[in-house]
Image (cartoon, rainbow, N blue to C red; front, side, top):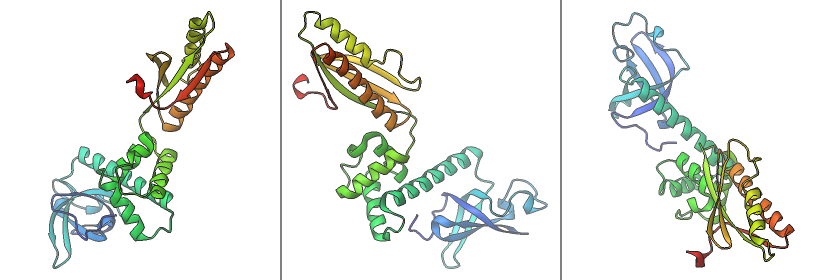
Length: 265
C-alpha cells in the first residue's frame, strides 16, 4: 500500500470505476485511499455520445494523473492518454504488487501488526525497487538475497520460505559440486560411469537443463536450470546422489557439497 494520500502528476495509476456520470468517470484509487475523475473529454478520443460506451462500473482501468488540487481533494485523470503498452505494463506491475502484498501476509501472518509489516517492507525496499522483486530474488538466491537487509533472522527466513513456496520465476539456476574418487585399477572408468549417472542417463525431465563439468580432481560441477527453485534443487541433489551411488558401489568415495572448495580457486 502507498502511504501517500495523493499520486504524483503524470503518474500512471490503477483504479476501479465506481461511478459513471454524464460528465465523466469516477475512479477509486485504492492504493492512495483517494478518488479521481476523468472528465468526459478525457475518457476517450473524439466525440463521445454516451460515456457508458467507453467505461463500465467495476472495471479496472489505468489512468494518467493530470492535476491534483489538495484543497478541494480533487484528482483529475485521463483515460485516453494511456496507450495499450502503458496499460498492460502498469496492470502487470500492479498485479505483481498485489501478489507481493499477499506473500507478505503469508510470510508474516494475516494479523501482522502494521508496524512490523512496514518495518519488514522497508527493509526489503532498501535493497530492491519493489517487494515483488525482493520475493523473486529470494526465490532464486535464498538467504543470500536478504543478507544485506536489516531483517532479523526470523523474518528473513519467513520471506525466503514463502518466496520459495509461492514464487514462480521464468527459470532458476542452481549449482553444486560432487567429489568423486575411486582407487580401483579401473577407477577412471568408474568415475566416467558416475558422471554419466550424474547427467541422468536420459532420465532428466525435458524442462530441466543439467550439465556436469570438470573443475579439478576430484571435484565436478553440477549446473541445473529449471522452471522453479524446488525442481532445480531436487534435480541437483538427485544428480549428485546418482553419481555418489555409482562410485561407492565401485568401492570409491563420493561427496556432495554446495560450495566450491576454497583450495581449488
